[in-house]
Image 1: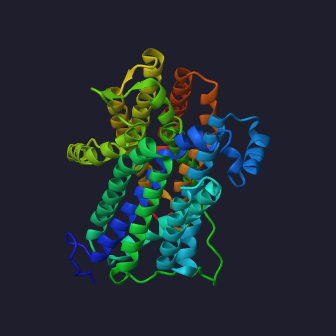
Image 2: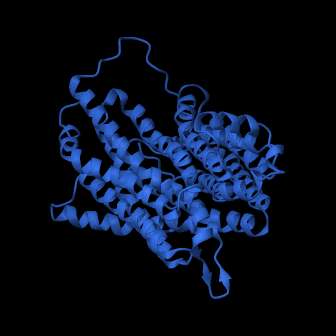
Image 3: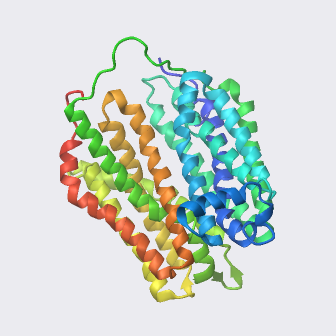
Length: 450
């Protein structure tokens, strides 16, 4: 039976609650992230400040024990990589806890409270690492469980479900776009802690929306693991499919690792080497971090129309073909930064970055959602849900690479650094070009159940 509630744009009121909650959560998350590396390098890790951060000597000792001596920039890069990677890794476990035991409502509420506390603690230097831990675990509790509630608003035969996730994604993108402009501007121009405090206020607003809208949300879904009967073994063909999906995961990682430097080294390069002047006004560095999100709001209708036109002519590419196109665009994208660094010196026009973010968003549309769709379609039924979670670990592994390689910027020239990022992206393109035909066969749609 279809849910007849059409109070919000033809959808249930609960969708408005969830979309606005997530918009504010993403606002707080990306608002803080826009400032994180700049804040660490300019203030937190400087002499006279570093010594007062609880636990920092221990963390630095552990990281240097693995990586060797780290400059302030390299240490900031490693902290960014660990934080951003774990923030995308823990939702796998948070979703499992919500599904099996606690329920989605309590997990989202706990996650929002932890994230609000983490953002507000960022306004002080001493509890900096405690704040990051709260943000990591808060994201783990909230992220997967709030998405589950969106789907639970609709019956299985309700065709509005797909549109609902598009509206939910629009809320996410709205928060991502707004965050650098508000939190970034306040933090960069008026004081870091104003930006962090604003991110915390944004999370409190999201929590308030969620709590006041509880009556419009679906009941918790709890799925108990089956106890009876042995689990069916995967067949040889299914293991081949799993191997193929893991290779796709590697392609995703090789695409994300250079691109996710956008929150790490990219702001440092923009600040030092890009002419950000429009007349007498100098564009804040953090504003550029909204570029990809803005392009991601503009481009999808054109891409979907292009794919629909191809389908009507019978020439639409399959997932492997789209991944090839996306990785090729990503090489051009990263190559553009390398080219600008080689020839532009310290006077690169900011207008070039409009092109960079547009190309990056275009590559994203051909790679990320296509890869997710491929995992959802091809993964064997007995491990399908688990492999959707595994797909998201690509962000975790990519951001660990971001943290490690980002430290190279302290001793490499910008031109050499961005050329290295282009090479990493090119390796993903080469991989999908070499094995794409074989993967197309292994991951082909089947009429029989795997």
